[in-house]
Image 1: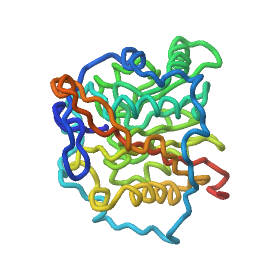
Image 2: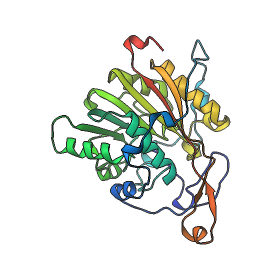
Image 3: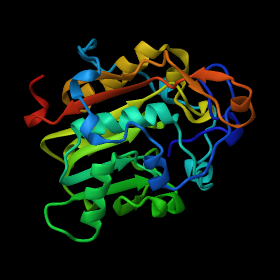
Length: 296
């Protein structure tokens, strides 16, 4: 999934365009090599500000109107075009790899929900996944669930690929296997039935397993659910927390991976002119599967 605007306007915010930047196409290994923060040894889970999500509602607070979209055409048509681009900037990707290095399991099975050509795993986890693809014992297996076969085929860490439109069929099939963790990178805002999807992910997850929903403020607005576009960043984080709570996840936390206040150089012609733009903000809203969805 992970729709983006045209490659010449990558830095699309929810309500306005900031500095455009030219995309460059690179392999997953090249993307990892270019990331100064991809070394798992440097990852420190205490370096990311974390706060506990507190449920605000006793009953589901949203209506079907909150999940309508400007573009109601079939997602299968929209995602039929392969997009071999990254969807957040290099700074955010590097910090996300640090977060993954500190939190994701080194063995077992990870589901990359709304997957694409790259899963942003740090090198240590990518190596473990490749070993798993080679059939080695005690290795990591990554399953990618997405909508574009060419993108999934290009993702070297995926052992299994599942083509599925979650807005048409919100049930994660048993074929993905028993899960230890699930990631979803800047795509939760495109799901029209997020609670159904996340409840299904929880059903496939081992007790004590986790889910990590990565959120930024970059999106393709015509495919984003309407309420996401109407509210501010803090309310979006609480909204995703609500998704997890009402789908049975517990131990829910909001992690600030990047506050978006720094500046990053801009590539292409504007980079040569010395222009800079703001880095992408990034959060992770995460939860844990507990027995019968109890505990907190």
